[in-house]
Image (tube, rainbow, N blue to C red; front, side, top):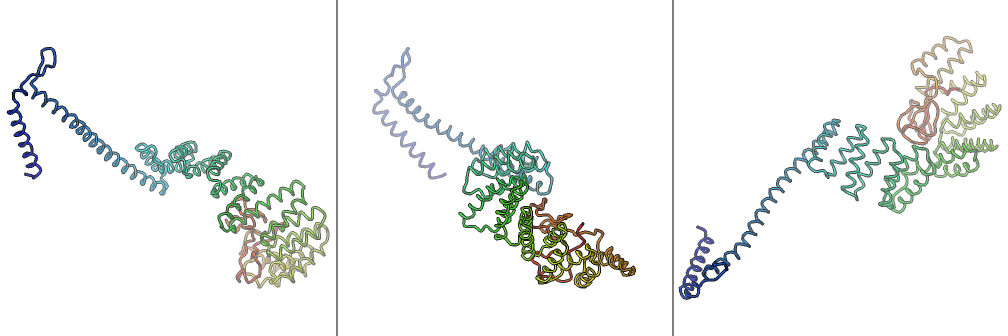
Length: 459
């Protein structure tokens, strides 16, 4: 028997003994009746016991009720904990199914989680992502809206809504959500600004894109972060603004923009090329050629040689074209690119012997150059040397099936039929170069952008 139980029994015995003594000493008083009314009466001692019992019973009842409530609360909490654990397990299974590409199964798991806990934030987000993948954009938007209501200060569901609207083609709604994100934290909204900029670029809204670009650069400056990664957008957007001005006939305004871009990045090919064309359009052809020559010296890109050649030939000045390409040949550290263009120009001008001289000097310098062998075959045929012409044509057939200069985006590897200032697949400016394989490393040719050739430019 426990000591506490013994103590309770002893105290109870003492209380009974005391009450017995008191009752014996006051028996007459305690036996007197207490009238309750309507002929009902109780002895004093019973009334005292009754009142005492009731006074002790009330807190006892409250204590029992409290204990019962706690017991049921504990059972409910344990049941809820088990339910949450089951929901968390289903959530993890949903994520695993999502990663394995089983969207339907993942959605079942996430909906099961939400049935147990309608405000499960992560399940709402993931379910919305799955629905977006399944192109059920309306449902995805609804799930992400619910997630945004669950955590009003969290930006994750808002960014998910932006993706929903973008994928569904509702760009105005996407921009509205981005504006909401920016309003919530205007000083820390780089991601929102960048997404907004991407939408503007895809829509061709270059003025708005430039406005956003300035805000991005301003925020980077305030945060003390480098702006190097933003340079391509700065250049590209400004360049597109200049192009729009050129299309509108505002060449002088465009020239003002284009002159500043090479100072930021001398290797930005589109700015040199567009500046020269704008100068030519306002009647300054000499300045235009000078700009293209400077562009070639800065970048080594063959598009400038093609442009100079076409410019002089269209003006019926073939001698000036020859002089310009010879000048590029003499000034260059390596002669592969300008010598090829000079030889091609001679061929176009029916100066066959001069073309042969240039092409023959190139033949031993490159391993893969089908255009060169094609020109040599044509020249040999003109000279009546059909055996050599056949050999050169066999070499052409071994190396390529397409007789043109092949341009490729250095970022996403998309091929272009002609040089382009902007790759519409990856959104990069100044990334389209000539695809060319050489025996020697590119750096040894002394060309900054290392353009090399696979076939001739279409004429």
